[in-house]
Image 1 (cartoon, rainbow, N blue to C red):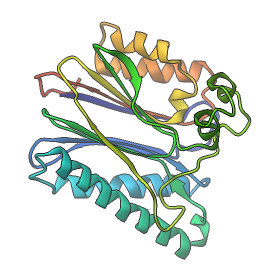
Image 2 (image 1 turned 135 degrees about the horizontal axis):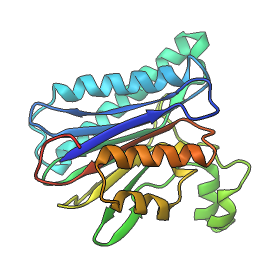
Image 3 (image 1 turned 180 degrees about the horizontal axis):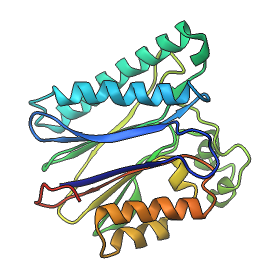
Length: 249
């Protein structure tokens, strides 16, 4: 399996509150994380950094996660612990009051791929069946779409598009969406913050992923396109490609 991680401050923000990375455990299985922090300088970046650091440390010591049930339980228990740590940190540090972060955490093995999701970062898959968003945005506007109150087209330009209903660290408990999918030879997973998904269309994502270029070049092309289309937010992404080679692409 090949992987590439990239993050970019964008063209407007004064600092990057996104964080993430890909990490390998003792069994050679990969964990990919994208966390989009919120709460302003010295709060959003603290939340996303704490989240990624905690999960990385736990993952690099993990082993024996050989089934989807085990992977899903690992994701749930560790993300709930991260939520508790962030919530307590925000309560005990005034400058971090109100901080939080989205989370996309993906455990990818040769046999299954498990995805944990909170917030409005996204995970997509490109395979023989086409291009599909695997996660549902936890936003007020998406709830309006889901209940038929506005159209998907209206949602794209809604003034409250970025109102998040669910995030890590903002409440004592959090509901996590977790699912396991089949990720097979030749498939791509794209994990990203809304700094990418708000600026690059599904069609453009597919075109870049299907280009005959390296993963590094695909990732850079997506960053450039998001910035060319405004770059008002931080932009973070991970591309995973399922193949039989272990080298980094």
